[in-house]
Image (cartoon, rainbow, N blue to C red):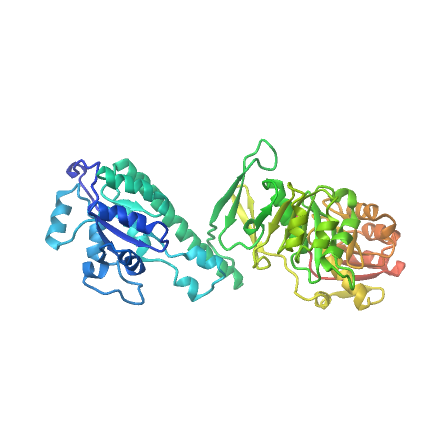
Length: 535
């Protein structure tokens, strides 16, 4: 649809604009009174609303209420107060046009030369964990309308959306007015501000739709803000930065408590480590190197310090690879765990919290990066991955919040059923396998990995790698495979190494051959009916 027609020859020159009347309505009251003082000193009329007007008035400055301009009191719990011709006429009148000036005079509407508006705290409300109507009520309507109107009319109006711009505006007020270039720059910031605000709202609604299940949305809006520029990306010749996504709950929202600046690869490894530990039930520690686990373990039974026990058991899986690794714990890092790490070079530790005494120990390792996860770190529900020209979206791969019920739907296809202790060990191997790059094979004993085979282009090589890593520990272990075995050769490698039980999805055209190999060896085998690829 075409906009209204106009004759550009009717526009009069207007560069400097003296500020005589300002509309001020802000949710962020930072330095509001500093600005009010400057406006009052310059004799500028301040028109304001609600709590903003109260704050300015209580500080001793004269304020004109919006209701006295519109002739209508605020209504609907403040939802309607500035949406009125007496306000928007003063925002949108282009005083370079004689006809606009004439219409304002006839209607008794005074123009605004300055508008100071920042919007309801929508993203802050979402970040606080609020839901439903509490979030919806923080969707600003009048604010964006005033910002966009003023930004469109930047030839006549200066629009300010952040306290960061107050010093420049105060200087402009003292100097006699704003320049066109100032107003144009402020307009650009204003449109970026409302765009980001609308994107955050759209992202929140989209995430709500995703969490409710059903069809994935036809349109997906993702809002992310740059948290930090990194020294470089995956390699030194690549640029890199970390962005936080509105509604996110993971590594990007973690707080760094100490250590060197995080690198691109640190973030990738920290996220992989978190994936390995985040929905284990028992106290669990995962150690990751190059985005693959080199050890995952839960606590030993009756351990005096469960998380420290889990770390030692994870470290034993592959002490060589653990050097320079990234560690994730699903519980509080204790003093004992910190002491165990004194002589182990570690890049990053990620955890929901750290004991104060542990933090004191870590101070001696000044380069060690500590990341404390947000309170809602287990709430991530969707995975987003960028591909060239677009992105992929999927449900996050999650497990139930109980241990043995994971195996309730498994099908026993070979050997004797496992008792609860061994079945728990097999469930641990199955859940750990999800964190290993495909093709993935995990060998485990007593809820601790003893051998990991990952990232191979065929499954039999992953079996050989897991067995090689495990060495003598392979005998008596259990094994998990993230996808089906296409041939019996992979399971045979495990069987020959002394594996006593295997869990895998099943579904190969040669399942009968695979089952026969397990039956011939007297090895227990379960089919899960689902796979856990991690590419």
